[in-house]
Image 1 (cartoon, rainbow over the protein chains, first blue to last red):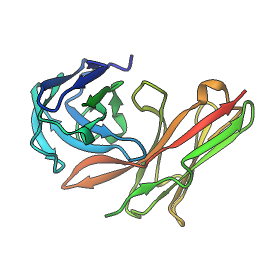
Image 2: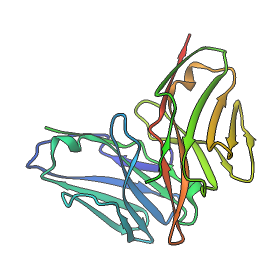
Image 3: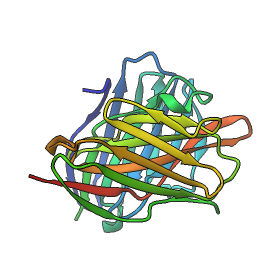
Length: 114
Length: 114
């Protein structure tokens, strides 16, 4: 375990479903990130939160909705997804936005949209 | 935009041999680089980092070399073991409006042949 826990590990959902991904860290970090990892592509940064405030939305479609209720928890709410959204969704945390070398990743949620 | 990329998508190495994974970057202003290892079913894990004021850094069985002249980064793994089989990513630090974030390459899959 890295200290960043993601649930569920696997998720299969239909295009009309609504589901949420959860990320939790107790490392005392203040910045949290959502990344999308697709086959043969670099990790794509989706959202960045720093001290619970969203600092970056990397042109992500509105069918992905992040929520950060506190510095330890990060959610990604999903609705009306498309098959091309199938990917591994990784959560990461770092001390804050000035400390890039401290990224800690979770194991990811493998999402399949059918 | 500028990007971080890898020369080879796959690499197979005999167990016990040394392996070298390469990475090219294009942002000459980047001053910090990281290598991550991602095993099957897990998120990326930090291996080793290097700042641009260095050209070599050694860890346990791993060495990172930085050639700023040709904007090239490499990861050397000595005496490879089956547990070294994974995808390896390089990442570079970007700074936007004082905030830092990492940009990742596509990754190289390293397979250790017993």
